[in-house]
Image 1 (cartoon, rainbow over the protein chains, first blue to last red):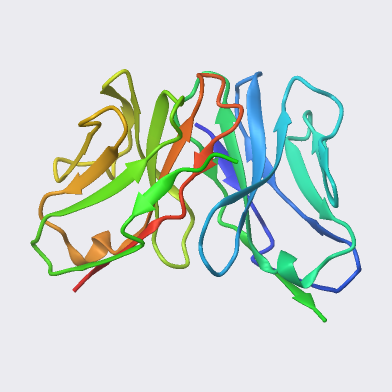
Image 2: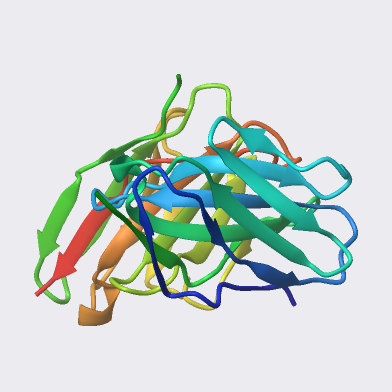
Length: 114
Length: 114
């Protein structure tokens, strides 16, 4: 069975600073995808970044980057130059290459302080 | 950018009533999903749908739930006799192919059962 764990229920960061959100997962699969989704107060789910497990290079999208450690089954999200609009709940998610469902973590509530 | 559209954004119903939640996936997508999120909890998988049939469903998706793609564009979730515990945000999602490389979520329907 797949599980996704986010051990930080709440975090805060000063505007313009850098913050890292943690995520670990458990799977016996070798090919899979990992995602970070952002859920602002509107509750819409917005894709932030995606990582393919077969790629060693860490994914980067503008101010967002990941640290993917496959052996450790760790997938952290780094937000650089934090902005007030980054305030949201962040969910880590996993899906295997052949699976039908995403597995989500319990989320980390991030607050960016002006 | 293409988007998944969900209507209504908020649905209020009496316990025991039937509700139908509607979704219009992205036009060239073939894989469709329903997820739900009870307030303060993580996103949970309900069902996946491909080629006009259910490909996988969770324990939550019992006989009270059904899905349908009636006309080639809409994808609906029906709850036959709503219970208080069905109150949640329901997300529709779609993807283009089996690789699960990118899943697009709709903005959700907030269902409130009174």
